[in-house]
Every structure is written in C-alpha cells, then in structure tokens.
Amino acid sequence: MILFLIASLPLFFLAVLWLPWEPRRAPESVEMLRCLFKGALLFFPGLLVMLVVRRIFGFSYGGLLLFLSLLLRDHLAPLLVALGSLLVIKDQLRVSGVEEENFLGVFSFLSGFLAMVNLSDLVRAWGDWNAYLLFLLPMLRISAVLFLSLVARRFYPWEGRDVVLFCLVGAALAAGLAVPGFLYYVNRVGWSILLTALPLLAAVVAFAMRFPRVVRA
Image (cartoon, rainbow, N blue to C red; front, top):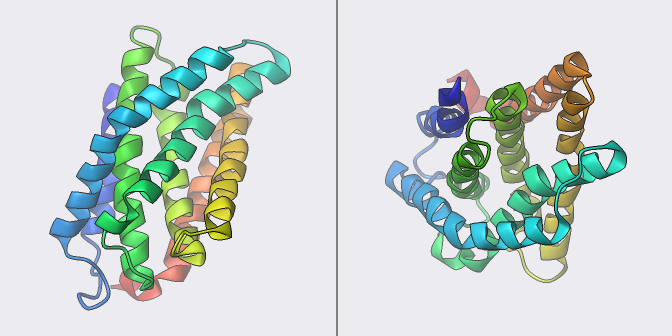
C-alpha cells in the first residue's frame, strides 16, 4: 500500500518518458531526468516554505475549515511552491516554446517535486496512514502534474501577467482537487473516489488529444 504513494509519480514519469516522442521536438531522456532531479532537489528549500505556511495556518478538522486546511496542506501550498520553484530556475531547464519540449520539461520538474512531497507526506503521517493519503492523494497529484504541464505552454515564457495567470490556474486546480479529500474525511468515500478518478481520466484524455501521434504509436 505504501508503495503506491512512493512510486506512483516516478512510475508515471517513466511511462511518459518511454513514449515515442519525436526526437527533433522533444528533449533527450537525459535532459528529462535532469529536470526530474532538479525538481526533487528544489523540494528541500520548498519544504521549508510549506512548513512555515502550515505552521501559520494550522489545521482544522471540521466543516469549511477542514476543506481549507486540506486545500492548503495537500494542494495549494505544494503546487504554488512547485510552480514558484519552476519559475525561479526556468532558464536552467532549457524549456522552449516548442509544445513537446515545454510539456516534458514542466512535467519532469513537477514530477520530481511532487514525488518528494508524497514522500514527505508518508513521513508526516507515519503510523496514521489511510486510503486518502496512500491512494487518492497520489492520484490527485498525478492529475495536477498532467494538467499544469499541459497548460504551461499557454503562459510561456512565464513573465509578467502570464506568471500571475499561471499561478492562478494552479490555485484554481488546487481548489478543485481538495474536494475529494474533504469528501473522504466527511465519510463520502464513494464520491471521493469518483471525484479522484474523473480528473485523472480527464487529464489523460486531454494528454491523448494534445499528443495523438505519441499515444497512437
């Protein structure tokens, strides 16, 4: 059970990495791995920011405050810190306006960052794991990585107003992805599972429509 939390994002990254991307339009596998490791490394300074934010706002276990707590802890803080880290080192990632290169660069970086967030959640909740933490939350983060990677090119080169819009998209996505967790904790497990599966399915369909040749091959 724990393996899914730890390995889901790395394995999903490898599955995308091994797709038959066109060499002239996609970065080499080694470059994608570099982006993955950069995301994983930048998790550590990002973790300090997330811990400070969580410390300031705390956590509540009931009603609207429960939703806001789950939103901040599990989605909003990790996604915005990940995007902020991406923007800080964007010039080092060799990401261009070419659609495949843009998608794969962002996808690799976010996969590395959020894979480490999953690992930190495993440690944070040590001995108090549940189905939400071990299964639903990792699936929601795969959806987040896919969606943000797909829309990243629309805001490229991530400067000025486009940076704000990109972060707002991330915040809106975080709000939507917090709903399944809230439903899980108020004992609406069936709805929680459904609303976890639907974003992932939608993200995969959007990916297939954006890169049909790669999927068909």
